[in-house]
Length: 134
Image 1: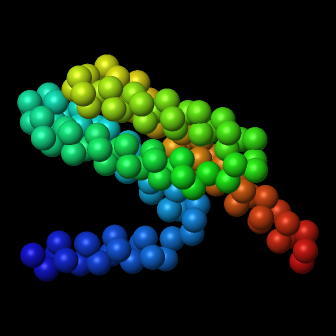
Image 2: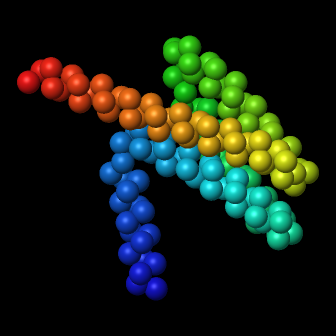
């Protein structure tokens, strides 16, 4: 029990000390995780667990949508993607359809990987500016 409490405290501290970029990455990782958990639950015929996992994935997608800054063109494109994902997750939940979940998993992984690359690029640009400023 002590190990679990320590791990939970570590996870909580990670969230509180994370940058906005890191929090976004955590959400993408959570989206991937919950879609995979839903697939596994469907395989095991654990319908309630599948439902709960898909709802968690839907909640993450909704969070992405409501936090978009629509003054940027990329946000309008992301809004369309997130809207599509949200609607497909609803369909997957109604039908308990693993094919739809696989499609959403691939999209989630692509978005996560793109975000990871963007974070690396931004970090390099900041490092370059810091070196020039010295």
